[in-house]
Length: 242
Image 1 (tube, rainbow, N blue to C red):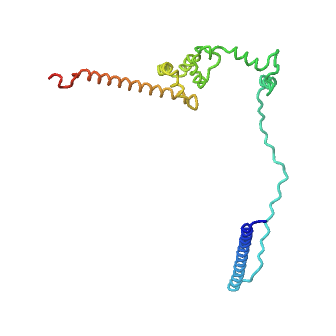
Image 2: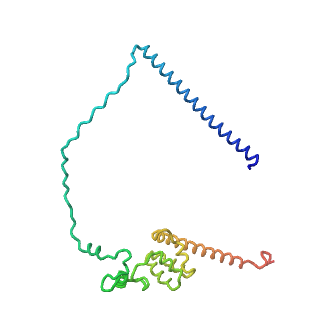
Image 3: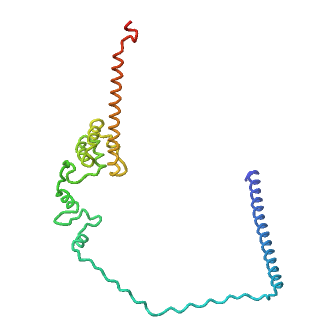
């Protein structure tokens, strides 16, 4: 059995629900009564206006809409467009017919070779790019790949050689200094969202590096002058000559 508190709460909930729906019904009834009262007043006012102005109440009828003219049954003349045909390209059909489909790259295509074998042969037959190290001789590397290779000592020198070909010779001293000091970390910190932004950030980093060198040299000069002034003073101060 439910405790008395649960029974009382259930009864109060039922009473609140009944009161809520009763208020809704009374409000709706009042709204309908007021609406009917307004309609009756409007009808009496309209009848009074018709009597005052001497007009007879007549039923209002709308005129039927005029039918649209029948469409013409004559067919429209067809517009002749000149047909433009491109010249027959045999290579296009050959590439389409003999290209490997998805999932068929490992199947034989020609003389026992698969598509992967043909791609490897084409890669090996490429001419070597002049001026590039042997590691990047067959294909010009991506700038981000070169930045990743800077952290490996065995590939760092080749990556630096290619990066110097991408940037202005005016910042080669900054690149050499970065490689000697921290292994190219300053170069890798220039990495941005795109290779273009990365190349644009390198001259700014080089100018900041030169400015820091100038400040360090100026500070060393001031320290040397200060040390020279201190060494030229008497050991016991102004009273040393007395």
